[in-house]
Length: 110
Image 1 (tube, rainbow, N blue to C red):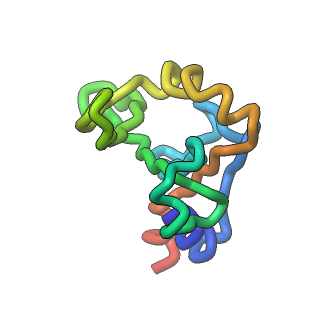
Image 2 (cartoon, one colour; image 1 turned 45 degrees about the vertical axis):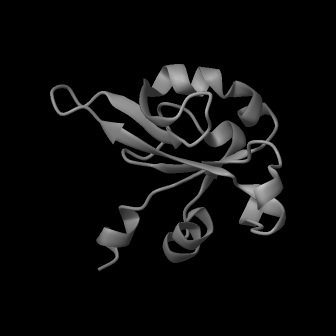
């Protein structure tokens, strides 16, 4: 997803470029989280193993991260305030393991 959107929109943010201020309004974000065994048979561009989406609360437009987990530790979909989520994944920002694209740039190209 990240590679396809980057190729079609010529836009991507990475590493330290990513912040609450720089992220597109409804960004799609890819992270490299470890090297799970399933990735050996399904290699991903940049090693991305997790995708999240910036979504907005309708009442006040506050940004949240929507993400889904399939593990037995915390299965299901969760919403986390964007600033809190960015703080939580700081180690991935430091390790250059995060990229963000803007899927709505596709709409402006039509």
